Image 1 (cartoon, rainbow, N blue to C red):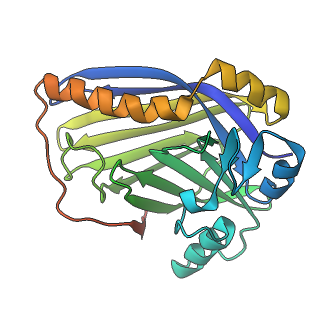
Image 2 (cartoon, rainbow, N blue to C red):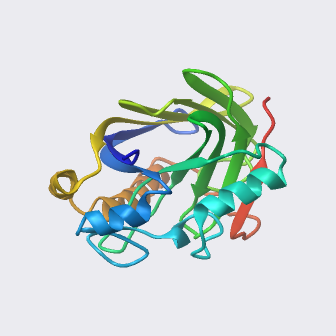
Image 3 (spheres, rainbow, N blue to C red):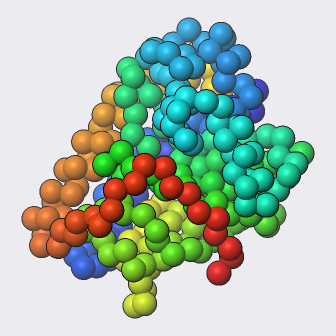
Length: 253
């Protein structure tokens, strides 16, 4: 099985306009999209497109219409003339737990014969909106990519900023970081790290008790930390437009 679990933590550090830091323990699933149906049959507490203790739904990602995510990825790679020979897609995300999930960031890794060729950074906000940044992937040990921010995420952040993505190839360790910058430097640093675990019944049971109701805690923590930022004097910025599922192809900058 290529599918695995990464147990680790997420840290956010805001440097301005007010300083703020948070850290919480999480686990992510790293799904080979070709293996989901098999995992559904093998693991009694994990289901594909139906309710369970742990579950994964196609409608939580991509076009959010419930259709094949691998087909959606390949369609958009062809649309932007990026890569025509992708034969493996893996997705890093949180699972649903008792039917609920919120994924601030999900990452699609697109492979041609085990060589990473493209990456989709799927970003969501708490208004049920989504923007996916699509990049070609080149490099052996790490990927570093930059683009302009195109999507309203935090009400306490300006839109006129850039994202600097950095990730290491997922293996025994996981590392994904995003620095949000303006003309004066880094505003926000977000880092996710993890250690690989097998995706099996024993590990899911262990994580159920190690990270109880994790997905509900994530959305609760987002709102709680927003309240703390507001208390510190951060200025609320309303969003100018409403979207559902935007995407953009990003050239290296």
